[in-house]
Image (cartoon, rainbow, N blue to C red; front, side):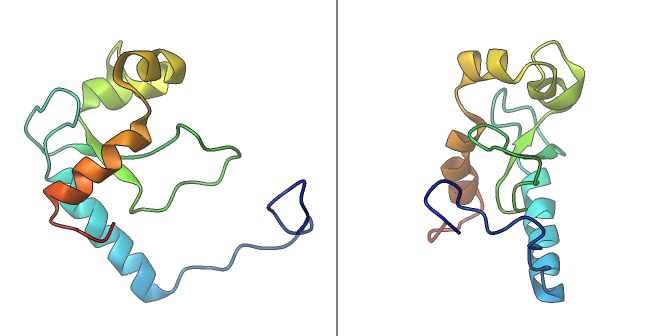
Length: 111
């Protein structure tokens, strides 16, 4: 790694998650899906949206970096985050700003 890029040399692979980490991530997302949409508070089940604001590259955010969104705010509606990332951010703020709310709803204090 160098000061220009936080990544290692090209070709360096990201370590794979352990089976326990994968199970933990799936359990987290199952719980997130039970929450109401963090925008309109429509009752679940919700989609578990991996945060995309403030990220660069194509690597998916970890499963603990998910927020509950209804279909309208996630993928299907005119206000869907995947239909206009910048527009959604102007109206609702960055998606990662909802992570503390999710952690509080799930009773996680050391998020």
